[in-house]
Image 1 (cartoon, rainbow, N blue to C red):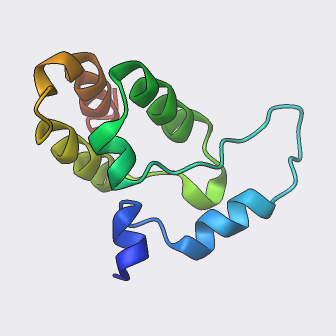
Image 2: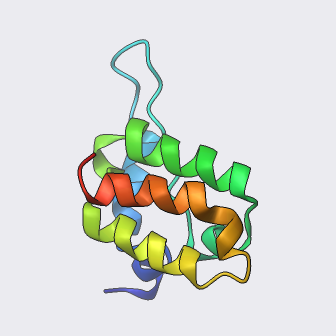
Length: 100
């Protein structure tokens, strides 16, 4: 895996570029931002929740995360000093991983 792909939890840079270049085919805009490891390490709980919900629920086809990728996000969240304050975001990841 390339370093750039690693920084975006395994989503290939080519997929991110393709998602951003894709024209919307319906009236609902697709989310085209994949959080980076830096985002996961530094954003506030509210910002993380907004970003992760958009990625998990409205991501363009090219960047839809797998359960394994969300598990990597969860691990990164647990490494934060404020992990206790991220319990809702971590629970959201757990629900995605478990298919809830």
